[in-house]
Length: 411
Image (tube, rainbow, N blue to C red):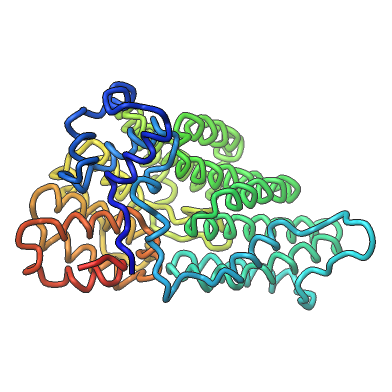
């Protein structure tokens, strides 16, 4: 296996492609010149995610490009290219061609009950971290859902469109985790269209939240804040009537806006949004995962709000506060593995900053145990393991070597 480029090598290549000197990059990004020089000389092989985000924004790439996301997938569990092609064709069916039409993937007609059962199963696989299984199952489902939309009328057609909207959202997250950002964006847009035709305001808001998540991945943080807050305001009439699902989605959209504010270093606004989401837990008083309504981050409740508080503390580089808040997250099974795994990465980050390497390894080991495939797709997890590997005495850390193998890292 050839040795992969370091962060510094990626940084130097992208900087030269942008026609910038090190001094110009430092000035435009706000990252110190010694940091940039140290990275490019490989004197420093890691950097804080905030630093990477500033550099990536200036170079007009995602932080994952600096980290080398293409190398995060493990060949044993990455979906085969045929499965990705099938998903792309399912999201982009060829329509309107002259002559005989290309038939969609053969699939018998499904009842509305079966459609909703299958899309819930797709989301369950997502939340369990079984991305390959979800991607493999979606093409046939999308084909069947489109057929149902064509065949049904009235309320049944709207119900079929709702199932199709949730299926497109699942396709979007699967594609995004696999680095297929263009496909993810298209799937989200088709989800929004289907949700609007389903005449379901909460599902429409969920599709906007899906778009917000994709935009977060693309570093469009100011646009995320606009999308999330406007979509949340559209729920006001339902919230005034005490609609439970509308309150849940409002809380989820508010957390998306909070993440965007934190990434723009607007921590005052981020804390205000976190408190707004916390107020929603007066209605949504227990942690639940709404598979039936199927939007990304459908898990919402008091524990999820606390987890996002930990994420906010990490963005403020306050590891002690992050760990204090993390102690308030209960060990409930109502929080799905992917959500808890993302939270535990923040916990591992906090331990790493405080020099508590053994605790960081234990947190990462818990992520591996609960969502092994999902973990391999996370640049954040890969960078944490790599950073721990480079610590003095890391070879004596129990559990680190298996984590490195799991993430397909050398050494």
